[in-house]
Image 1: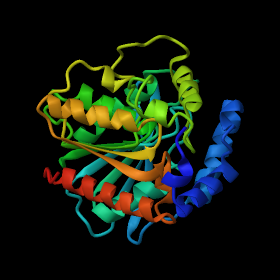
Image 2 (image 1 turned 90 degrees about the horizontal axis):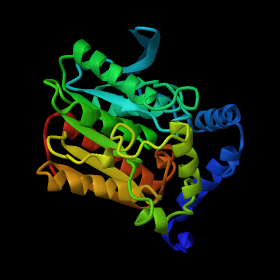
Image 3 (image 1 turned 180 degrees about the vertical axis):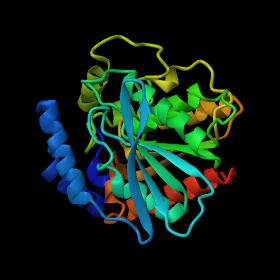
Image 4 (image 1 turned 45 degrees about the vertical axis):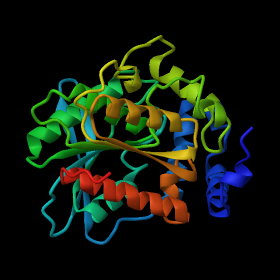
Length: 313
């Protein structure tokens, strides 16, 4: 068993305990409606506000039969050099425009880029590939609306979606110029690596992951579906320059490592950074935990570099 008392510092433990006070570890045993209520309340408790000069516009992309809500963040007085398409985490069943509102606002404020947060459809009401389909709608809308380069980003479930869009659009004339994935779940081998060594990690366990997987697919076997599991792809060539940032104390960390390795092996550019002593969901700790604050700075800097079409790793 991993000894988390040695890996995790006091600041991070305080964050874990605060999170658990709002979102108990047994939350997956509640109904979906209850889980969403608990999650949304937790996100409100961690809300850190907007940086000076950042404003947001909530609108929707109209497509036949539905609308895909988006929130566009802009920095006053700044013509953006790039646009970030952001997909929120939440296990494909939780979250929305409000859950990651301040994260997107800060990403905008610190890079000067416009950030577009995408409110994709959630399971179980909308099973796979609904979330992916909405992400593709958002990508097509973005390249039609903006002349600037597009950077894909997302955390956890959103990192999965961002990667799936990268795989689907690599032949596009306006393909993304980069992707920044934050502790993503990419469909890796659950019998080895961090899935085993961190199966009982604080904030995310293998039991949680099994629950989210089945909810997303309705229990259907979708083995080999790269829209669901980007690591299932047999071809990692021609993907955009990729930065993957994972947490050490997280069963998903090996996914980020494997994903970066496969891109490099296929001749592409990828950099994987595992953050020591951090846990899944640490974005919400970026103002209270030193390690998380430093990691968020790395995330911001990576997005800025990718948006400029540069590679410094």
